[in-house]
Length: 384
Ligand code: SOE
Image 1 (tube, rainbow, N blue to C red):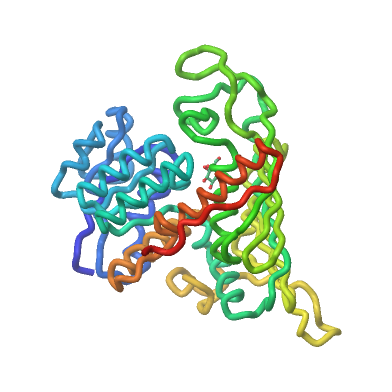
Image 2: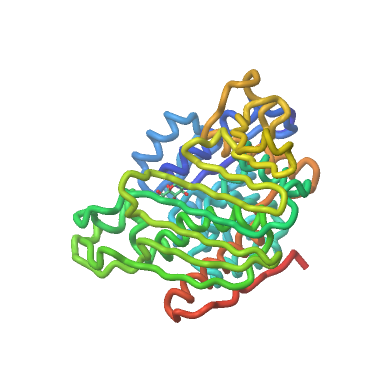
């Protein structure tokens, strides 16, 4: 571990914390050639940034992201900002020659995302979009099993992401902590925020999607804006459900809402193949459910694999077999993979280009919800 990787992190919210935690921990558990150094935290609220710097151990504070990007001592820019700022900051960071990690979704829509991919690839800087759930060991195990052909031909993909935190009609939209409800900032509602996770995992596990047919609903039509105090029309989708077809011939259903009373972050998926099925649930994230049809008939049944053994993905880096890890570790794994990508020159995904594919699915979903028709999904394809 010799080379320093000087990090400038922008945004002191929930994601700023998950990423800072990963930067601090990664070298304690992974043997890497680079060591992230928390050089600077940036937030337009100086007081908030100073408190954040103290808590997480950042060496300095910036209140203007342009000043951060101008600094020669920053190698990696970690963007933990609301979605409307991703494009401008990422493109400027690429022009300044910085490596970039950007929180999901890549952008508010495919058009913004495509401009980002163009700029980042022109600059040739290492880049990653933070779709952290890929790096939960049970989800990575699902990827390994599928790639090994254990499921055989895949027929069905089913995913949902349910929450319940926006049910109150008195909840304002916009501003600190609530920008996800403001369409101008977020780009969309559950589609870009929650289904984007489900779509990223699905494209990774099951290949590309061809067509979608969606419906969305906005249950609360008007909310007070936290910043202006005015009652404004709500432009986000509160709930979205869509059908999809994959390139490999499988059929899929996806559902997301912030109105499923009792569910806080219930991300689940199930995949049914010719020989086997797998299922996963974020509320029980260290387990992978697996059904193997080729088992002896009398013993056939769903197995609940406790994904905590040394031969499970990432688990040899943590404690002893049987002791489970959690949500925050997915960000540590993501960073370790990003750094390993620097070392081997084999970039870890999802790159900005990979994340643009997810953005194009979101675009097709939102378009279909408007037209009421099946819509084709655009593709950006592999890097030319
Ligand atoms: C929304 O509540 C949210 O924080 C998403 O923005 C995250 O991406 C998701 O992982 C958890 O829920």
